[in-house]
Length: 164
Image 1 (cartoon, rainbow, N blue to C red):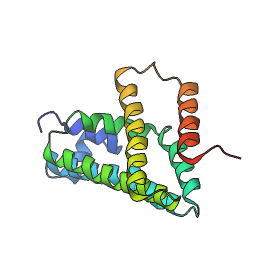
Image 2: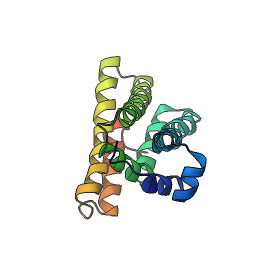
Image 3: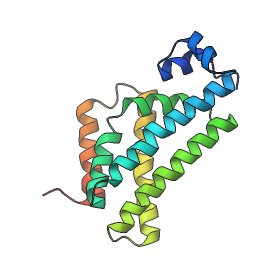
Image 4: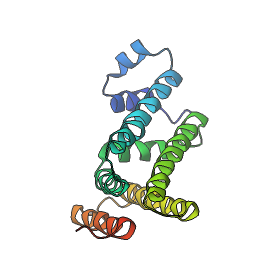
């Protein structure tokens, strides 16, 4: 837990270090609030917006296009992954992954995939996302914007078929 400091967490929440202490009794409370906010914004709210789309194909297309362009989730995820041995962080990452994978699996099932195949496709799609997030961390210049766009279009074609 020592690797998690108030200042970067306060920055991620958009507050000053002092106001972080004003609102939270401890670093643990601030961490829990930051994790709740991250989960809400990058998982719960995203899935809620996507569920408003009638067709699972449209949900997946919107998800792929949005997820690979998200800087908030990427930055926070990379920071969290660096301290995932902390139980509260590991639990948040696991909850987010479970919910995200479940959403993907449900979309693939609704598109006619058998449950096992839908689960496999969900895992592969999520692995691609995590791979891009880690590329941003370890090889920032390796994935240029146009390459990312080509990747998104390839994922869409692979998982939901060519648009048309």
